[in-house]
Amino acid sequence: MPAIVRFMQEEYFPRQKESLPYFTEKTGIEVAIDLLPVEPFWHDARRAFGAPPTWDLLVPDEVIVAEQVRNGTLEPLGRRAHRDGVDLDDFLQAAIDRFRASDVVYAIPYVAMSNALIYRRDLLERYGLPVPATWDELRWVATAAQSALRGDGVDDVFGFTSRGLAGYGHNFWIVGSTLLPSWGWAGKRGPGEPPRVDEPATVDALAIYAALLREAGPPNSAELTFTDTHRLFAGGKAVFLLDTATELTTLRRDDPDGVGRLSSIALVPTGPTLRPEPGLYAPSFCIPASSPVKDEAWELLKFLASRDELMKDAIDAGYAEPARHSVFDSAAYAATYDADFRAVLRETRAYARINRPLIPFGFELGDIVGTAAEAAIAGKQTAAEALHEAQQHVDGMVWTSAAADQTRHA
Image: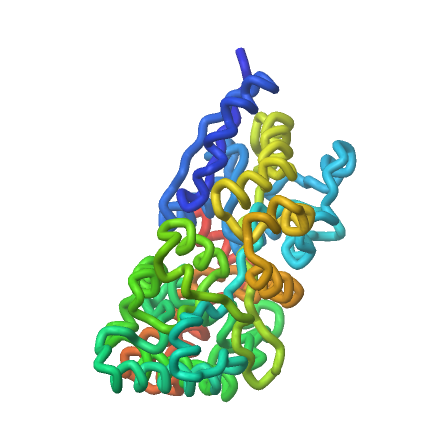
């Protein structure tokens, strides 16, 4: 009877399913795949590493991978990769290195997505406005563009849009990856100590983000999700969008003659640190140590993370931010994505790093800070008030690994 590998992936990345029949024909290994919406994807993945595990191969968020590395529930992959000639140096090291423990690699990134500033090139040219390089400049240019549009009688196009709804996967994607790190936020305190989220730098950062959305964003900015902001920009209703670079390629693919054709990307704006912080989202292949089919799961991982398969993801499926350098540097990639896009993405990759804290209760921290951000964006609290309240919630939790383990297995 052939072995069956249970594979779980987020529904946002369905292309892999197309290659599974070929993999089974080639290896004799059958695959049962689950493609989950993002919320159950995170929830179920955190609880999937028991004995037996729920799945044999997963591609979860980095926080989940880090949790499981600490728990000792992941199969080491470095030795397998060396044995089978998988070149780990071909992957973005900012992702690979975060999943090492005692120089052992436990996960291999699937994509390497980072934030970029997507903007309407035609509108900036029409009004003689520059591409902003700092958060202060973004605030000025976004409000100036919106004012110019209003002067021309255009009342339904806003200067800026970005995620406002509270949540680890909603506004914290921007706040934790790009905004707060641009002011130097790390949040680290002593071992077992709760993170610091209320400090002068974070208050200044959140105040600018909230002001930008209130002054130049839609009136319901505090309610907007990733899909909402994408829809707004795609519909020609915003001058700037802060989200992953892949969003621009999606726009161009979905509507070749639409807004994507009139838009470009730039490096994310800088804050007081002067270092661009595009962040990094690198969901990564990992295998539960308790899987009864670890060898077969490794064969599937090796297949899906191969250069050929990741090339199909980047070229055919439009996942424009590949984990492998050899895909990004290939002639096929250059023929698919324009030179300006590649130039910005190359610079972005040089700065990319996982900024969202890889700590116990990382999801909960993102939700707490996200709630503060939503309150500030909505004007219900000042940034200082919102983050002070967030710090009180954070300080009221127990941040030891043991407590985190108990919560995960409850």
